[in-house]
Image (cartoon, rainbow, N blue to C red; front, side, top):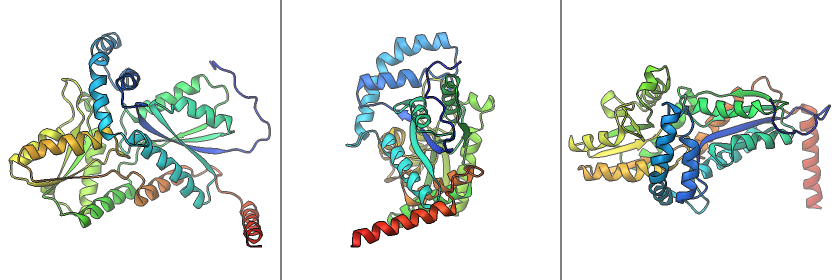
Length: 363
């Protein structure tokens, strides 16, 4: 049942479309207190930790939230920028660029970003969109590969908001784009550009975020989609099977996770005589703690300490032109059927107004 008052329905109002770009989330600051609030929300999500709730809440509040926040805050501090958390900075930039690029293609779409955990929240952002008269929302989770712990969790949060909302907008979701040709081409272009400026490596390591191994047995397609992304990227780059490897990072706890693990693999490669490697993280749409600290700092140190000579991290697509064109095309395809293009009369009128303004300025 709806649990809060809403603005009265405005009869005769024109339909309005919005795009909501959703990323995982970030603490508000690189402090233990802020990280504790963030982790309390993130790790309490049953999509993220799939063990009996009562047992997990005891572990989470009795141990993890007492120990981990200070350690994690130090890691966040090492990548924090003057603008804030890298993940939030990049996601906000992507939303602003999508607004402009869609507009250039003639689409009238309101673009906003939100975080599954932390701020700005999905519920608050959806409330703001409804207050602006939005009647259709396309939700784009910032995860190329589908997982119950990421993509489905975004859907859960939107559904929770919907349960307390009387007048719902029409909703669509983009579940994945792990094997779409423009996405693979964008990744390949970013690798080629990196190689054009740096020496080509002995091995390209494609590191994806890890998940517990049991999720594969439970039917989660994430592992298969990561492997497909890796294979397609290797094919686009013309790499043989011995020139690249797919790994999984960010293990948590003692359970078995998807293998091979990234850092142990890097150490093994170094000890086997592989001296030069590049690492790319195709499962992340923007650079964040897991790429900038875990890979570009920790994994680099591990590889070099094990005998490697050169380690190079290839940044995420972030706000790169090739990445933004890919996202714009993806969104445009999923907007099909919704009347987002302005009419010829409206376009002509706008052109006349712009000409009049230019003439007025020149006079």
